[in-house]
Length: 195
Image 1 (cartoon, rainbow, N blue to C red):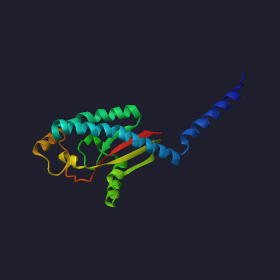
Image 2: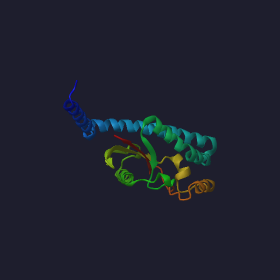
Image 3: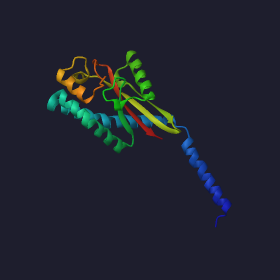
Image 4: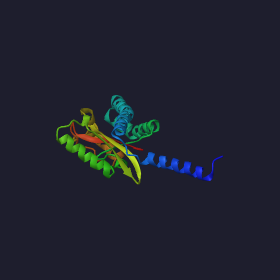
């Protein structure tokens, strides 16, 4: 039978090990694994979203695709979050949906993305992740740039069909996500996960 002293000693040792597990710094190997995982999550969200938008364009053109994005994107994000355990969203410096507004960290990263693009980097290759601390909780945050392709210009370009513009105005009265050109950074996928 253990004495009270032995029991307290075991509890204290366990508590110290438990505390170390949560204060031990995240290693470079950990961040590399988290980045790889985050890239997979972007594909789990971005792939189905892209397919839904392409189907929308095929089945009814830009006006139908706008509806798909408005209605299906939140469900696709929710499914990616449920299956991966990551918080998943999109954001931009030029928002279409005000509920996707960037926080300070995301705005800083988006501005870094613009500087990287201006220095010659392709939006397809632009991503960034790091461990941050929020209210005493460590998180891994990751963003991947979303480039503008020719098909995107139907809804995000500077010369929109009047019917497309009217549909966007109806759904997004404060829409700023217009005026893009091919190769611009339209926004980013943004992910986070508590560690």
